[in-house]
Image (tube, rainbow, N blue to C red; front, side, top):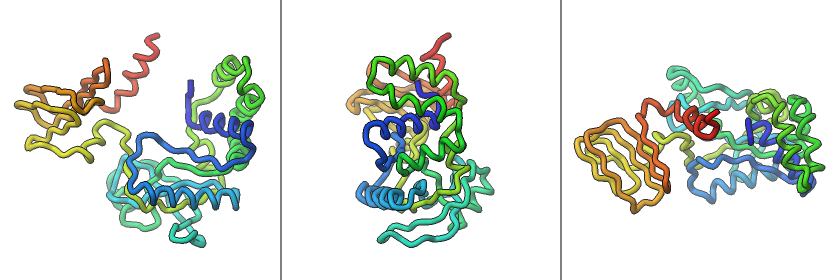
Length: 273
């Protein structure tokens, strides 16, 4: 079971090296809204081509659309030679999620971009950086390449992961390396990382209720309903500030204020011990 993004990225690169040698590797996140897709493809193709030529680690910076406190930020430095109409920069540093005043300053400063959490690099480049900055990860995970596809794989994977510290690839590598660049992601982007983020994509009724699915709401306000099957019907009566999610035989009902505690609930459900 993947415990952290540094381990997931390292293991993915190890497997890529075993199967393909030294290809370009992209790390993308599943819960992002991106449009138009063709512009996203152009930006990724540019990052991939330059990563292959230079060996640099690339991240994708998003033009800030508002003073968001829920995103990390990237501070750019020198503007590099553009690749066609795709802009490239040296990256100065990563910035953590800011408080509102700082977010306003970042939004007003053209040097700052949202950190999309998307990365592009060659396998050799990222594994070299992992070896330099995360020696335990390299020691435990690099040898797994020889066991991939064999009967020893599952046991070796569990043993290796049991001794790894929990750390993200951002903290473990990207904030430490000097060999890092950024391409400007000038496309529409949103990190739909929480249920409340869907408010930006679903039109409200006159009482602030939003839904994907057939919603019947009475005396209810600011409630979000999401049905995996958009033909499904949900009725709410006399409630406010709820999130209701229907997926197959599973249902989630929570107050919006408890969104941050959802991960803890899911963890307990998966591992009740």
